[in-house]
Image (cartoon, rainbow, N blue to C red; front, top):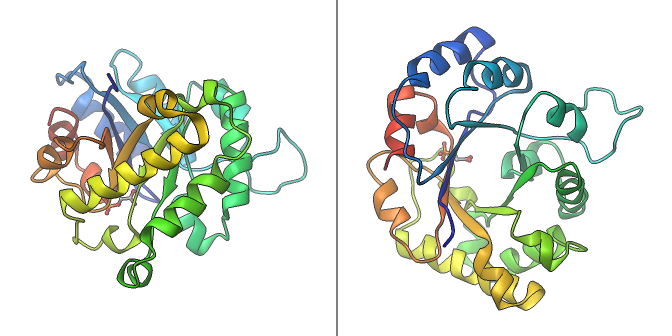
Length: 248
Ligand code: PGA
């Protein structure tokens, strides 16, 4: 059985004070033990959130990291720096990073390998653009992103990776993929994983859907056979919505 994982991706939102306000609002709320609940926050809020939520089941994730251990990489943060403060997850290759910060499948691959070696759980994002979907290239794009992004990872390690299928056209647009479209893409990703790592290993990998997930549609999305969670942007910013999402 794959344990569902619901992760908020706050993107570049919330100061430390605002993050702590959010933590206060959820710290004594009940959170389903049947899901892994995660919040991926801006770097500055990570340590305050780890501390504020240490008595809850909510885990904290970063939204990016560098693949090198240390060195002359101005402005970057390493896996061991995240690990040191109690961060457990890291989003890798989000489409906004691919689009605005020149992230490629190659850097995604290096970062995923580094995250695994530092014992962080990588949430590796893949997804097609609207143009790619409309020209029937969705599967081809996903196959390349999965194969290149997960090179040189062992079948033993793949179960530790979370994949987020996020069609770019559904992110922040209010336009959700239908649950059938989302499930079809996640099933396809799983078939690529089976080809790479074997069927048994592929059955263990958790695949999230992301793109305009909200309290009103999460249940239907989570009912799909190949969808094991959600990566949620906008709707994860309000504590009431976040609680509804993790307790879907
Ligand atoms: P959204 O973002 O939920 O606001 O569409 C999802 C994401 O980018 O992870």
